[in-house]
Image (cartoon, rainbow, N blue to C red):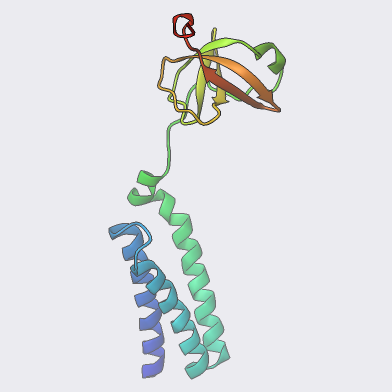
Length: 163
């Protein structure tokens, strides 16, 4: 094995190591991630220039395969599982039939509306949005508009506050 081949492998490995550091140790958009990506690109360019097109294509292909495997494995890793939402709202659904009947209906927020969330109308839980206001759970609301499948609510203000 030539020293140039070992250098190419070392450059590519360093690039993937920097990406792993960015993802697992210092998450966020820091310096390690972009440096890792640039290092991988540099390793591919080095392979192409010093070892020829065959090694350049091989290093490009290997980098793509490793990236694909990493993207497949990441959501299954402990770090990836911390970033992926695993729970849902049971019983909540987007309604697509009979929406006109909801216009003016009163309900109570089940989840925070920030600005979207779930409101209970009688026994039915429905995904809704506000016009941008945030509401806490158990807040009374009223349906003010229906835009396609989008149900817009506003907080109910008690009559005593109108005077």
